[in-house]
Length: 164
Image (cartoon, rainbow, N blue to C red; front, side, top):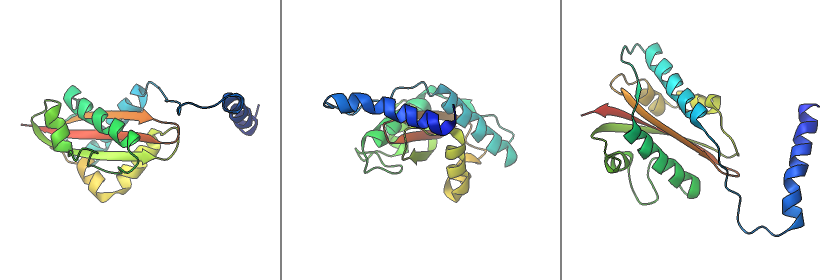
């Protein structure tokens, strides 16, 4: 079956439940994004190495919790499109609330579709001078990445840390 036929069949199959009954709430997408999240970590580490960094990048669970908090906030609050949370929190606030003590920075990717891939994320971040500076900062030795998907929006947040 061609990709076009597969896409049409999938669109038709998805539309059946909507056509036969009322929709109470928008469906919540649930996926295991660990492959995407881990791929972002690897790609950021590669970016650091290409920038001349000799330090290794390590996943930090507190930074991942801070990234998760902001990812869910951005996904559920359409007015958000950057670093400030719906409660006015900054990346430093969220990291501190998660128990992290050190300097932090953040990169955010928002894609107006059901899914997002590592190429979209890294292409977006690599082309932004401010985000590239964060990714290639050799002092950022820790990272936490989280991603979430909604019916028409996907968000990836990476929080970078410099231990105190």
